[in-house]
Amino acid sequence: MDMPRLVDRSKNLVIRLALHGCTNRPFFHIVLTRNRSPRNARPLAQLGTYDPLPNTNNERLSGCLPIHPLTYLAAHRATKKLSKSAEESSTEPESDNEDV
Image (cartoon, rainbow, N blue to C red; front, top):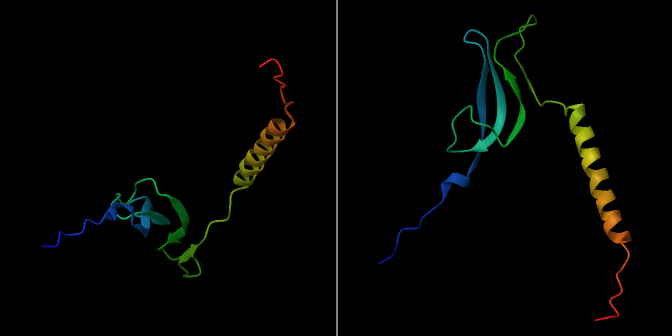
């Protein structure tokens, strides 16, 4: 008799629209999230935006967000800190244990 396979579907990722904005002015974030999480739960990543209401040119706006400048600064600082810690660990003097 074959046992049924247990599939962990909680790790499946989906792209979904997370609702933001007001009742009469919806605005959506295109997000990557787990398939069992609620609609507006904290996403794994935000991929872009979607504005369903037409603007003055009768266009509906959507697109990917540009990377925020603070993200570049945080990455630069983290890289600098990592390289400095690696440099300090490589330049530490070797202790001679001749008395052992």
